[in-house]
Length: 222
Length: 130
Image (cartoon, one colour):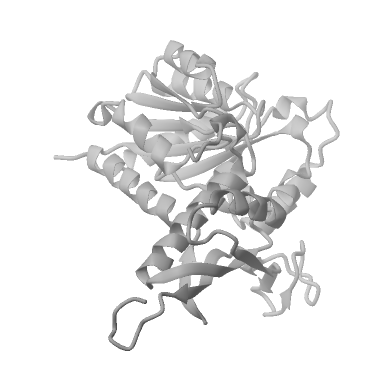
């Protein structure tokens, strides 16, 4: 004799509740948190380096780096002037709220204004796991191809900002920017988009300005 | 974790672990002796492979009251709504009726456990467990 029990609960609800806790911790410390996601090689670490070069002179920045192994990325962030923490996920293809909690534990949040979280390079899994950052940004890059929004809709649906990196390669790579942007518009209408090149620094000012405004909008405790 | 090498874990595996915890919590709350079926609702915009989840499910649920249970996936197709003319359509770049570009996704994002089917502890006439 079986009986049906209604559940109607999100499968990742436990992660989402923990993400909300992480968010409250950031709020209490007055830190703006940004989750940066991208496929491997899109330029997450390069964008972080450029961002640090612009913002470290005026604010205190922390970087939490998620990677399957190695601390190469955290080392680069530390060299660029951030307080950096490496989380090796041990094979896991994404960060989740529990891992971010561990990262937050090893930082003095009161001593930060901005926290950049570099997720594991992957366009599928990170999209499903909320971390508790205030916003999330996706870095796409020209060599990846213009069909990515159509192939990875969940990722494109869930972000608050999009950085299109390596636009200096547009003359050399078959990439239909209009087709790409139509796909983005379809999934995430009006998505805030920055076209940049981390190599030539073109377009980075607008990105840095946006981040500066986000940090400025956070209330500091006490 | 559950005797698995961490390096072998992938997307569907972490999701399946979350699913197992959620299902067991509800099953135990209802005094279940056994979970026989799980009914999931997954939108087509979610990146999830049914076969992959079923595979991990069989592995992870072993030794729990959900061992041997079946997963049923109700996939929800993507539906878009035109904010200009009000038409509903599939995933499209422009509205097939008016050609407008202001389309909004109204279905296809679902990702939840709708219900579970359980067998409860049999209760004897005196109210004690058999």
